[in-house]
Image (cartoon, rainbow, N blue to C red):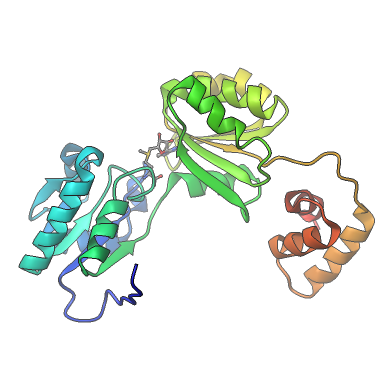
Length: 288
Ligand code: SAM
């Protein structure tokens, strides 16, 4: 890719494409900038026109033109939409069914097509289920991996999880409600019954719920029988056999806190010095 520096807000504001985040359940989470851009857009492209029409009508927004661009036809439709934006000097807004476009949803190919055709593209941030779930898990937020949806086939899912068994960062997955039990069963088998997990259900909605515990406890809990949308957050692998001088580490950490350093920074630095996993140090110093 050739080097390009882009400033989407220079010029007369058109042609331009905005990826606009929408709520993941709570209408109040739609930003005023998101509403403004949807109101002024010449075209709103979305996944499912029924879902977006319902959102627009709840927000009293009248789309000038609403077109669908769902995942199966995202590539060709993105190229076509960018061409139209360019030729007719338009403002196009793209929304997915919920949350942040491009995060386990269409959107990324539209950005790619815009970059390739030299059309300014910008982003109106908003809710994303995985960031909320990670923050609420209580696990390490400085180092994490987000995998989106797991493979549907059991053997592929198990292979996929086996490769993550000793990863030390927090692991985040989306899962469809009807596959949750199977997914947790495989995780229990592969990561071990004692690995900590947080199941974040119905984020931002009335029935928002967090179930935290070991994989065994959560697998046997009532939460598994409940309906709704879930994010699974797994605590990173903890190397139990590593011995280290807790007193010395705490002493160093206290000194670093006094110097104004953040605990995530301290964990990283001390992990390098003492050659132990940084999540183990973070755990030790989190209450200082
Ligand atoms: N683009 C969305 C985002 O920014 O998070 C994700 C879309 S993906 C197709 C849908 C998955 O996200 C669901 O199956 C669930 O795992 C997760 N999800 C979406 N909304 C959620 C919510 N309110 N509570 C918990 N999980 C949610």
